[in-house]
Length: 387
Image (tube, rainbow, N blue to C red):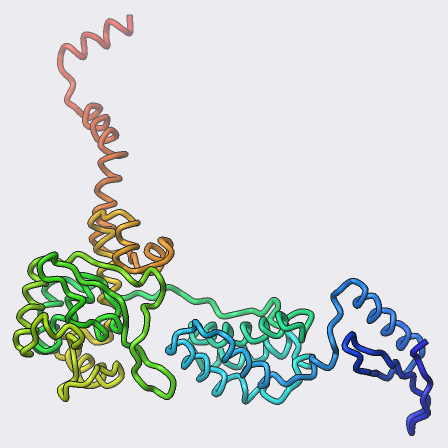
């Protein structure tokens, strides 16, 4: 029997002394012998079933496990790592950093989510919660906890965003406002559906002017401490080759000639800052993009809206989903349809006309026949029938 009675200042307590599989001793005190014996029985049963967890691991701090989780995935992109680190530092560690894992309950998680919801948008709340859930998931995987406290947590509803759909005239106006140095970026975003980082990381050697193709093999993205780093595309599907219409190829040729670049400058970036350095998104957005969209009369437009316009145009023009998925670099075709294929007035009107022709033309013909003026012959037929 490993239950021992102990005299304390608060009376008799019953202490359970057990040894972990590695030989280390651990103990826990209870007010009654029944509680102590029940705990001992559960511990021994869990050990025999192979589901025993060392209670000392549950006393590890949330901050310790979070740091370990952040460093465990070498495949994580630098931009994702930087975002996760920021969420941990600003939103999770101040609340849970010093607390033992086992002390954090579902009600604590729900209270934190509710506090976030008062200050942040639903998408931001869900992004922060995803990091919190991943840390606790790691704790479960490491056998520090039997189950995560991120259970049945109520999250704010994320409503679909209504984004503007850019037409050709608006795109041309916006291109004039950003200037010759960056106008081709807009067309790469709209005509090819490239992400900003893919455009900023595009090198001269990735453009095949004879075959009229552009190969996406890397992207420029923000890493830790705000540094711009050149890395792999967002996913495996993001590495792709896209056919380019001839007018856009000609635009890129003019752009490179203006910069004094040739096909021999294969490693040079197609787009750079005024000082010839790789582009930084925050600076480019503040100095180039935001003033241009205001002057063009398109306030609120984001660069990612160009990619959305591309996806929506692919759907409206009847391009098959597989081709659209490949050109956009999506790993899942559902993302192509659910996230980017926005309903537009043009598409809604076309659908209305097609449905009208399918279901209403027959009804119209029938109504027109019923309303046609009656002839003498019709009267004779009716009289004959009445007889």
